[in-house]
Length: 81
Image 1 (cartoon, helix red, strand yellow):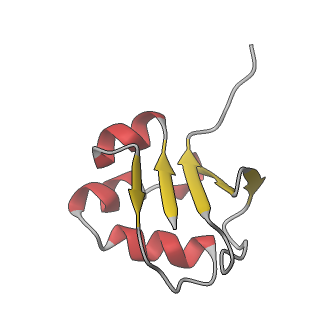
Image 2: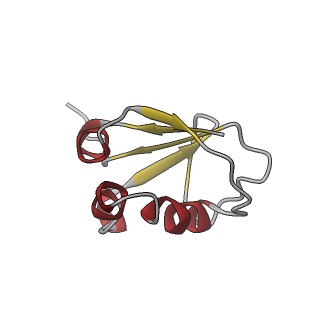
């Protein structure tokens, strides 16, 4: 599965994309798994109130299933302008 990071998440983790093997059933479970990869990952996901997620390019919530997903993207809230 491809994991994409945008904005300050990318800066904290030090990568815009990584490929991982996971058996996590939901986004929330995936986040818990990602936090264990490094201190940078743990910091990036320490405040999930300021993180949004898309699964296969569809905005969703942390309880969404990722069992058949090919891509999960994490990014800060978007603002219009």
